[in-house]
Length: 322
Image 1 (cartoon, helix red, strand yellow):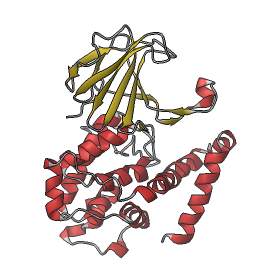
Image 2: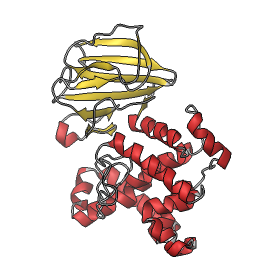
Image 3: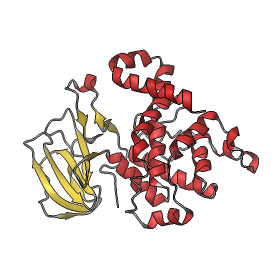
Image 4: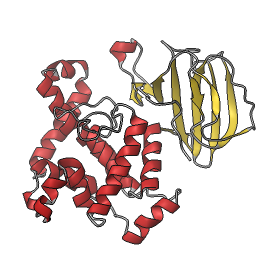
């Protein structure tokens, strides 16, 4: 079982990856986790069953906090208000109280630092772990869902499109009022269930299910008749093509087994294209939003390397994808 470390609604204040240098005024480096907004002494919960392997005593950058290890890696929970009441070697359960949030260590305000490392000790975006978990539980191929979120938002929990699609899974609130799109944990859970319902509606056809997520069921099956793919909106055709490019989709039997086998490993299927897909997702979604908002030129000056990357891939997309 995997649970969110804070009670909803959860808000991300700093994403995994590069720091916002203008906001934090610090040298360039990678942020190896997520920062989540928290009130003073807000309860923090263990995300997963595991064993306590380290307790921070307040002297270092993490201040007070705790690290647990499980079969697939480790979780770091940091910036507590005091030393956690846990000792190394103790077993913990998902959802158990780990401690209380504060601003100890190198911190600019009350928050929780949530870090994840794989079994080799390499930092992993925690949201990737939650996405895979919810996909498996919903019976959705986790690699397909990973690529889908990369295409939707580039894993940006603050993404907001011109069509009012919000958050990491680009949920439109007026069509989906029962989810908080700005809470990435809730949004990923909801999106996998939505994809599962689209797969049931399309008899397991991933292109049609993805097309319904992007354009709506009415564009994929108007008046109860499946529309030829060539008649779908161009954006939707490109969206489906890029998500499924190079993917060895699970068969019907494998698809059913995903729910029961929470440790199924699809990690090697699309590793070669994952970075490219993320960059493309940022390009076609975020650059368009920046241009429409009139802030693209400002963004280029502030982030010239990222802007050039987006421009290069945007041109490749225009030249090679119908």
